[in-house]
Amino acid sequence: MSLQNALLGVLDARPMSGYELAQFFDSGSGWVWSAPQSQIYPHLRRMEADGLVVAERTVRGSKLERRVYSLTDAGRAALLAWIGEYHEPPAPRDPFALQALLFDMVMPEEAINVLKAFVVEQDRVAEQYEAHAARLRALDTPLLRERLRARPEAEHERIGRMKAHVFAGRAAVARQQAAWAREAIVLAAGPAAGEER
Amino acid sequence: MSLQNALLGVLDARPMSGYELAQFFDSGSGWVWSAPQSQIYPHLRRMEADGLVVAERTVRGSKLERRVYSLTDAGRAALLAWIGEYHEPPAPRDPFALQALLFDMVMPEEAINVLKAFVVEQDRVAEQYEAHAARLRALDTPLLRERLRARPEAEHERIGRMKAHVFAGRAAVARQQAAWAREAIVLAAGPAAGEER
DNA sequence: AGAGACATGTAACCTGTTACATGATTCC
DNA sequence: GGAATCATGTAACAGGTTACATGTCTCT
Image 1 (cartoon, rainbow over the protein chains, first blue to last red):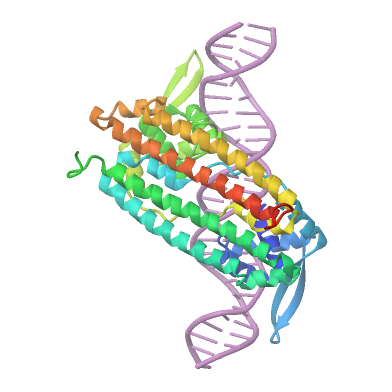
Image 2 (image 1 turned 90 degrees about the vertical axis):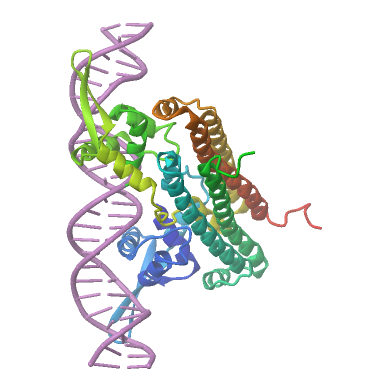
C-alpha cells in the first residue's frame, strides 16, 4: 500500500510521468521511500485501472510517447483517508541490530570495523537529511514550490516547517544511531590495555 | 539472507525445533526480526539441504515427530562470515515518515490524532526494549543463559552488556521518535489561539 | 555518428503475508 | 471428552529486486 501512497503523494504536488516518478524514487529524492522502475510502471497502470490516477498521453518529438499521470478525485480521497488514519507499524526487521546482537561471536576487531563503517554511514545520511530539512524550511525545493502553488501563502511557512521536521527527525535518529555505535565500540573493545583503573 | 542469519543465530544458543523457532520469531522474543511459521519451516528445510543445519528427528509420545535443528560447522562459518562483514543498509522505506510528510494535506486534528497514537506506541515499545535490556544486563534471559554455557565465565558480563546495549539502542530510538512526534504535534497545531505572543 | 538522457515496459526470482490443512499430545 | 498446545507443513498472493529488452530524442 505504501508505494501507492508515495506515488499519490508525489502526484499531488504535480502531474508526472512514470519516468519522472521512477527517478524520484530510485535515487536521491526518495528519502523516505524508494522503489525501482520495474515496480513503478506496472503499479501506475494498476492505479489507472483502479481509477486513482488518469494518464494523459503526450508525444515528445514525433514518436516518443509519455504518459503523464495525475490524481483523480478518487485517488486524492484514498490518499487523504490513508494519511488521516493511524496504521500499525510493520513487524520489526532490523538487519543491523540482528548483526550487532551477535557481535560477541566474532573477534572484537571485526565487530569494531563493522561498527565504524556504520558510524560513517549514519553520519553521512544524517547530514543529507539535515541539508534537506534546511532546504524545506527555506521553502527551497522544486517539489515543495510546486505543492505550495495550490496553497494560500499564509500557510507556506507552517507547511515548510512541518515537512522539514520530518527530515530533522530522520536526521536525529541517524545521529542517535551513530552515537550508539560509538558506545558499542567501547563495549566491544572491553576492558582494554591502558584502560584499567 | 537475514532470516537465515537470524535462525542460525538463535540455533547457536541451542538446538531447536521449527516450532520453537516459529514461536520465537512470531511474537515477543523476536524483537529485531520477525517471521511467520510459514516462512520458517520451508527455510529450515532449505538450510538443511544447503548443509547449514542438521535435523535430528525425535518422537514425542508414540507418533508426534519433531525435527530438532542444530548448526553444522558450515552453518556456523556462514554465520560468522556474515556477522564480521559490513552490509549496506536496505533502501529506506518508512511508511510513517511518508505519512508524516503529507500531514499538511489533512486537517490538523487528524494529524494530531495519528501522532498521538504514534507517541503511545513508541513509548510502549521503548519500555519493552528497556525491560529486555535490563534482563540481558542481569544475564537473566533463558536464551542468553544457554548461550553463556559455551563461554568462559570471565566473558559473561561483557557479553551481557553488549547485547543489552543493542536493546538500549532500540529503546533510545523509540524514545527519540516519541519526542519527535510530540514536537510534531505542536507544529501541526500551528500558531494556535492563546499562543500568540 | 555516437553518447547519454528520455521513455516504457517484461521476466524471473526472492521475501514476506494470510489463510488453510492435518494430526498428536497433554491437561483438566 | 474437550480445549489448549505441540508439531509440521502447503497454497495463493503481495511486495520488492535484478536483469533484460526496446526504441526515441537531444546534444556534441
